Length: 117
Image (cartoon, rainbow, N blue to C red):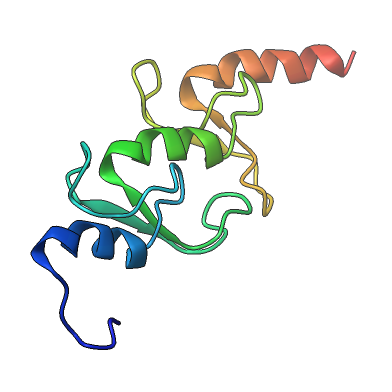
């Protein structure tokens, strides 16, 4: 907090930026400014991978998820709903979220059976 409790109107944006929490993805302040809506998603520490806890701009969220989401055991793409993936998965258990996209499951199973020969 500012010791006097007041900030010049001209200084307000810089003051807010100085004290606003940074986005976990782009590190810019979580504020409505510079092309950001001010809306954000909160994530607990380690929700995906080893990132810290905090907020992510709505505009950065897809890139953040693609970076940190668990990957498909078959295609190595993030286990997320996207253009070619329904978001449904086959879970192979484990604390590290080992899973396969529904769309990759048949090929993954063929690969497992082929490697056991």
